[in-house]
Amino acid sequence: MIHNLLKDIEIILASASPRRKKIFEMIGIKALQMPAHIDEVNFCNNPRKLVTTHAVNKALAIRKIVDNDYLIVGSDTIVYQKSEILEKPENKLQAAEFLTLLSGTYHYVYTGVAISYKNQIYSGYEKTKVTFRNLSAYEIEEYINTKEPMDKAGAYGIQGMGSQFVKKISGCYFNVMGFPVYRFYKLLEEIL
Amino acid sequence: MIHNLLKDIEIILASASPRRKKIFEMIGIKALQMPAHIDEVNFCNNPRKLVTTHAVNKALAIRKIVDNDYLIVGSDTIVYQKSEILEKPENKLQAAEFLTLLSGTYHYVYTGVAISYKNQIYSGYEKTKVTFRNLSAYEIEEYINTKEPMDKAGAYGIQGMGSQFVKKISGCYFNVMGFPVYRFYKLLEEIL
Image 1: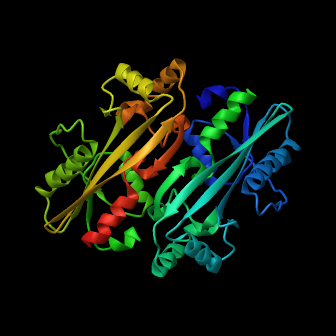
Image 2: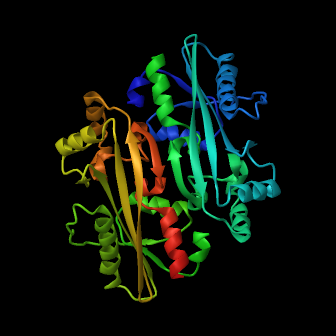
Image 3: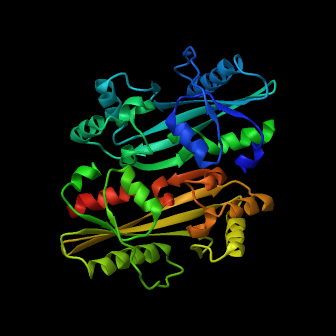
């Protein structure tokens, strides 16, 4: 199991996300959390490449400032619908636009993950299909008023009030929450 | 949204499950938790009927002792694999057997939900396909030693350390956690 694979290794989570921290705690990993500031790359038509590159760049940004014994984990999540990438909404209006786009149809969530450890860097991604029920304009307003959408890719949180909009998913749930646990396990298996 | 649909209604969750309580909190519902003691029915070859009947019986067991103004929610979760129902393991040995059965293949999780309110009772269920990666005998032992499997249908918790065994799911995630949020919303829409 992951907590035993990582026993005696110091871990840094290159992310400020409280949801990723929560997933790490859920699988029994203690990590130091260090937000990485990176330049956004532009691969609008290639969500896999986008999230994987962001994840790698986050891990490498922290690698520059800590020594090689730390295992650094970078991660990046986006919502992708009809060739459009929905990141965190910039304001309430944009959140309403995103939720209107997602209502009554499906979208994909991509999360990239990268592990940097002792001169090696391994990366991968996970893709999950998420189907929303129909949302009324009133519900979208109600939801925006809870403030939950504002710091989340695609303007919703599957692990919060947003859960009630999700009819079904196909793929890794934790990916939608922000960190693909199964993919992380597979990469650790290879790297360690 | 659910918390507004249920505004000004007193809710009773007819279950002792801390996971169901957590899901209720996640969607903004305050509920009184009252465990219902029911006789198990035996529909081994019909998991839908089993979980729905258990959910209804739990709601009705509480209905007998509280007045009609309360909205009572009953729920029941099982794991189903190859015509076999896996409930909570009775001991460590049975947990090991269940996890061995689930390793490297898929199973279904069924959760029934029932709502009793003002002389009406509505019920439904949700079915989710869950695919596990291969687990080694050593990992199964490690996992059982965490004690997490012991109070959970099928001997695993998707919202805990067990998350790392899950390769993918197809359907409602919250159903696997123990309460089908989307189905609950659909029933509330009908009943209110």
